[in-house]
Length: 462
Image (cartoon, rainbow, N blue to C red):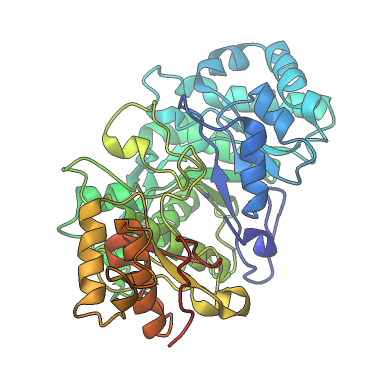
């Protein structure tokens, strides 16, 4: 996965067949649960609704989650896991039973709009690729049997590793060994059922592997010179568009230029190992903030300019039981305690910061009711970062730090977070609450409620 003020602009769905102009795209969020510290599903649904999130993608059909989502107004994508593909492929009665027990039982109270059959099957170490298409066909037949095929679509998320070529985008092509046995019959099914191909696309991986060749600004939706496709002359201003168009080109090359596409996973990790170049909260905030703005402005990709871009952010929470590098556990937009990992401007009118690698995007003052906003310290950052930001704000930043001196009105409570918050806010207000003036290397963020630190009153303007 848009979050926060998304519902105003979510116009597209899996059942949309054609577009006459570039409608705004939609953003949803992936609700992964490989963790032992997540809130109860009922609390998660409350969180989703409070943030304006009205589309969510699941990795299974967990009873407690589907029950919690009932009558919520949230559209749901459910998944049939890879380990079920062999059985689903071999036996129609298996999928009949699976759809009956995991889909039909929950509809229409739970608004299920699509089934993801498997996930990145082509890279599954269990070699489940040969089962995929038949499993999809059997699930589709089960939906027809229960009169659910008009409202629920069937697809399967593929990774970009399914491509043999992706650069330049116009040369996009599928791996030859996948085309006849899997790609063509899968795309044929999607075409016949007016479904979308599901694609998991991560510019982070491409950037981390080629940081010497790919501009970070290009990967993060920031201002950059762009890249011109030598094959068709189209100009690309961000890496995600290029990746998506490589898939479109690959589909066209095998005769399926008319199948729609939805990005079922994309995101950027807020932390990573030393060798995971580019991982970090500032870059994650810039990527997701830039992505939301890019999607909600309504433009398609250079190759398909009239088709809106539809995306599911990965992921709702940091998942502490995921294996692999540190980044795998740090894709979440929220901590398990429901606090934001970083602040992202989730509206089309908000502008991510474009300068400085350590800056975090913030909302523009105009996006707040009445323009009343304050800047406070991020209590989750290190004491060193808070002290560094405090020193800057009270020093060359020119903030009025007299009220936090010993004996002054805002000295109490005597804590680094409280004092830093006052200094950060003074600097923010002095600079007219401008975009980028409340970041301090990720040590601060904007709030729309008056901060409460003892009896201290925070100024709202200079």
